[in-house]
Length: 126
Image (tube, rainbow, N blue to C red; front, side, top):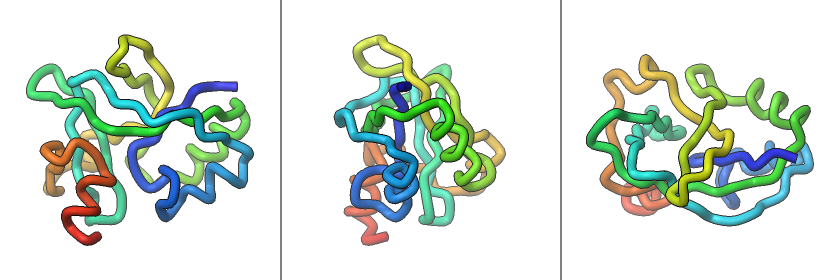
């Protein structure tokens, strides 16, 4: 099994969480990234997180345990422009997780100041 970090609609209780559950993933814990990421809202449908050289912040996320085969299924069901990459957690560990590609964030609203997708949707009533 692989530790897998999610930072948007795959999180518990959100729109696409059923995608994780149907492939047998199990929730492990809430966590945060190292303070080197920025977050954008993609048309208020889902977030995209990018690792930055400067001006980053810690972003709230969830860690799930998932099989390698299920990880492939999840990646195939993600919107275009989202991919799987290595995410640095606040404690220095690296896990695989969902990241955005830079082109996806162009012209979109940056929401880094909220510290995560849940906080943004709560504040914005998305």
